Length: 289
Image (cartoon, rainbow, N blue to C red; front, side, top):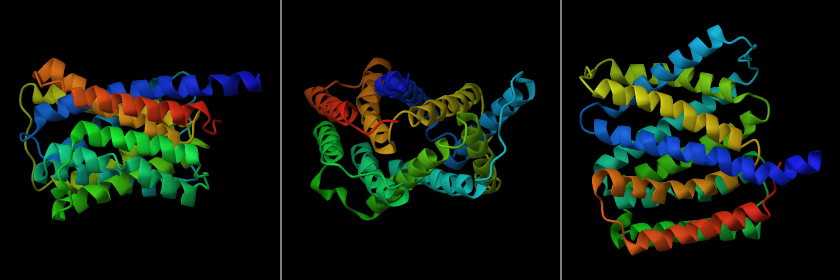
């Protein structure tokens, strides 16, 4: 039975991550629709508010007992401060840098995660993991073709965001060993809500029309994305999970082609193949639970 679970672990990790990638892509579409209309910190506030409301209703009406008591609140707080900072820095970068440069810097997250996970969780840095990350990184470079002038003042904000995400992912992996996905999501919303409110209270903009729908969808997709990612981390090491996240870029590019008539380039296909190769290397012989 144990051998069977180990055999199916890679498949389960991929299945959960596909759900996460789909959710993140839908959330990106909603964020694009709100861009320039609703301040970023207010969008993050609504995301937490919607998430907390949904989770509270599920907790209240659930027939089964849902365990949210935790002895690791400090780690929850640590994770969510860095997660909020990562989100905020990423959105600031979008306003200061070309999107290609922002994405190129954002996808350094697996590299930082490799280092952070080795320090915080004692995960082994193997040659296979390094090859997987290098292939994925090369795929990003092929797709985005960032310019030589990528390193400038604003770039350090996005690099800082990537490091924050790496710390957040690693803390999530540690929490997933003892906490339920529901508990991790509940504390994510509970802790990030007052942070967003504090930043929003003096710069409030009332949403109108379809903006309410986009905000609601952001709240729902944020829950589903993180729920899927937390469950994926139960079946694979955090480095493997973040490597799978490379596939988010070509997926979002396809969304751009279908919904916004953006051009599909050969570089996207070639980069996607490199990313797929990196993921196959990572999954074939990574240390799975």
